[in-house]
Amino acid sequence: MVTDIPGRTAMPAPSRWRAMAGWKKAGLALLLMFGLLCAGLVTAGFGLKHRYEGRVQREDILGSGTHDERRWEAGPLNLLLLGSDSRDGEPDQNLYPGQRSDTIMLVHVDAARESASVISIPRDSYVDVPAAGQNWAGGPNKINAAFAFGGAALAAETVAKLTGLPLDGVLVANFAAVRKLVDAVEGITVCLPYTVRSSDTGVTWPAGCHDLDGKAADDLMRQRHGVPGGDFGRIHDQQLVVRALAERVTATSLLTSPTRLDRVLTTAAESLVVDRDLNLTDLTLALRKVRPETVQFVTVPFSDANLQTPAGSAVRLDEVRAPALFSALREDRVAQWLAANPQTPPAN
Image 1 (cartoon, rainbow, N blue to C red):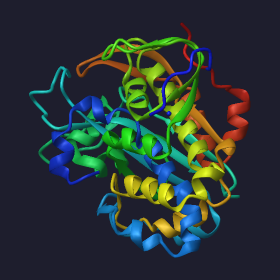
Image 2: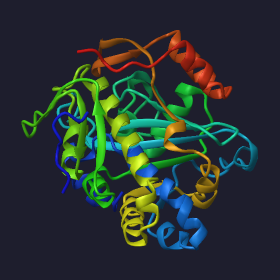
Image 3: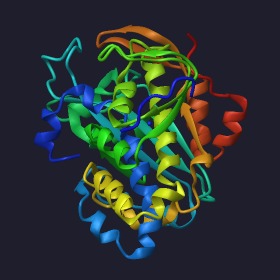
Image 4: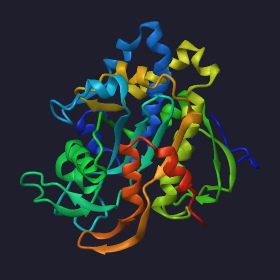
């Protein structure tokens, strides 16, 4: 087990998924995806892809006719990563029982397939959510409500409508696997720019670098009250853990150990639900040049973190900078947008 080092500043079946405690599902979709894909770059060469691809569950999320071969061959790619949570504590939890997407992230892989941008969409963003049969008539609501109203399919439709981006794949993760996955890579090192205090365990991580095992990484990524910026601080911590895991997964010591590599891939594969038409082999090939150091993390700009709405306190996305970011994604020029909009961690 890995412990903190002072001074050094890491879907199962639907019925089991719904039964999990909400805190276990907080913020780890990318962690699992990067664990699967980064390691998958190596295993594909060993002819082991069927061993892991067969463990991934599939659902019809994007619908038929959405797979664009031209984009997979030569264009940029946009992948939607979702992690759901229960609706406990929401103002309308009795009206719409079920799950909400606690984490919503877009991974934009550039046309050159050499870098990726991870775009975090605040879960309480107040946006237009399309109708979902008798469950929801359509209209403004928090973006994380889409998952409750219509599952991953409606969440994907909502994100596509908000951003104007075509989606090339959707992955849904079981966040309870974070402990196993981080432990499978024998821990990660996360460097915090601020102090985080756990409201669950009472643990405090001072600003600086910390070696974390799975339990500690899980605890850190759940925090939204003892971190600067509240939910935005949690988003930042999620991004830090994802980067740390990606770096650990691609470390030589892991890639040269078949036993450890198998453990990581099995844990990741068994924790994912993916769109029916998403070809994981094609995805692995598309990401073969992407390395942790070429991954950029972005949070969609917002102008009001306490917007009062019929759905409760929500987040108003910036009416100028958010559309500009979405335009940059559509035009595959995120690097230029980031140069003009540098990302900074939440302030104390």
